[in-house]
Length: 365
Image (cartoon, rainbow, N blue to C red; front, side, top):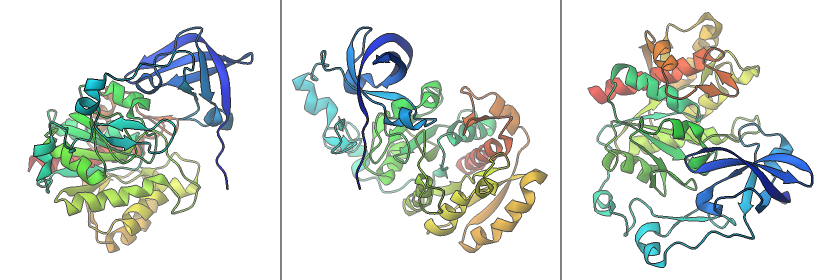
């Protein structure tokens, strides 16, 4: 078996859109125009006329979320090294994207050089904090909208896993939610959040004790990986997030992936991803949220799947949906999942908002 990297040399011809941590560019590759994405913190800031090295593999495959050419280096104008005096003080020694050519050295929230070391050194409990687990990044703004519908001042933190994009900077959703979240904690191999953590466990503790979150949302970054089989999907890690939240004394709240818009039968009603994650991977009980009323388009399929989830020890919680559509429409960022907006995938977004509403009720009580 082998891995493939499609390398290309290109010239930057125009600067495109920029958001926090990332920027797009137009580049010429042997007379062909491509759209390239750069993370300036890793490679520097390309300028028009710069020669760049690109990885064009995802673009060649026609991927959706990740279909950019990626800037790997500006070989003729390398960014300067960080100030030597700041290396130990500011950058720490937690390595993310380990042993890849673009591994990043970060300051772990709980390592010795961190100002939060003392806070987290003895932290061992989430103190009952509700933790919403969701398998797609697109769930995050919907969960936030549901939580804020009833508790507009609730502090909601995002704990990002490494099942999708590794750099948090790739997410335009996070850029748009700046000021609306208590903060982002990037865990595992993911990086670029407000805080860096080694595991989901330490990330949850940081959300509670450093960001003072009332509610945490655990989900992978933008994009996901799957092969169409029950076990080979990055969102299966949702079940492990339930275990982590429970072990630490939190209140796991499962956002079921419900829908009637996907053409694939395995994602209609309750997605097989949720059935696997909560029914087989999660070893601790969670509150699995069912929006009520359920539309007729999914009601029968959902009812048929529920006994298996109940048999796994989970609590099935019905949450009213009144006011949630209006809360979703007021989201500070566009709602989009698998190319579908709110109107096209209303059941999915309302289900996630209902999970947020339930978490807010737990946090308030």
